Image 1: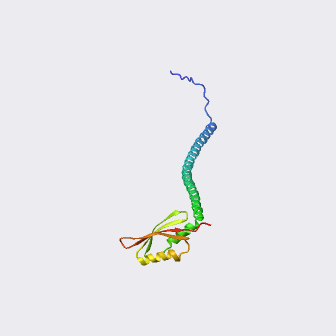
Image 2 (image 1 turned 90 degrees about the horizontal axis):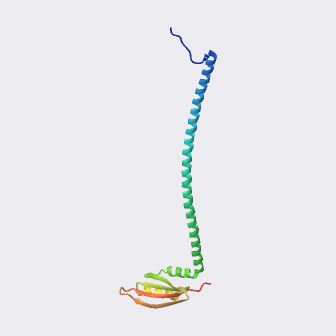
Image 3 (image 1 turned 120 degrees about the horizontal axis):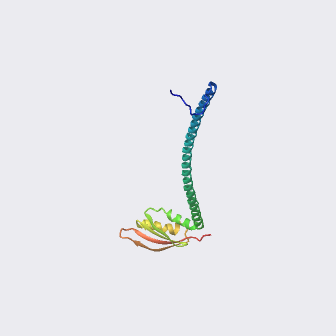
Amino acid sequence: MSTKVNFLKNIPTLSERDYNRERVYLSYAIVGAILTFVVMLAVIIWQLVLSSRYNKLAEKVTNINKQLSGLTEASAQQIYLKSRLQLVKQFLGERAASREAVQQVFSLSLPGVTISSVSFESENVISLQTTADNILSLVNLVDYFSYETNYFLQTVSSGIHRAETGEYQMELQLTIPKES
């Protein structure tokens, strides 16, 4: 004979109504857990998308900053160049007579005559070395500086040399009118 002894407290059994209510609560809890998981997954994916966009934008901003720094440097160089050009312009503006004298010398177009070198001996004197192919070209050169050009105040020749090739070399000092 065996007798059954229940050492557990008397647990009341659930009624059908309570059982159905707990099943509804369980289904709500499962649906809530699934919705929470889906929302968390959506938030994580959205965060990854935003992070990717942020990294791309940050890279673009970095590149634009590099370009701007390059443009700033280029702008500084342009400002420097502009100031240098203004100084050159001012210098050339103050030296209008010298500029005109150099223009007169380089506009010389006599056949058989070449200008070997031009240099400024002083502020108002240009040294000019010329080469003439033959005596006729030399005569035309002398006539040009003696009679045809009235720009130079004084033309002084240091002499005429005849090279072994038959060319005539002449060095001239041309005095430029003073700046007004």
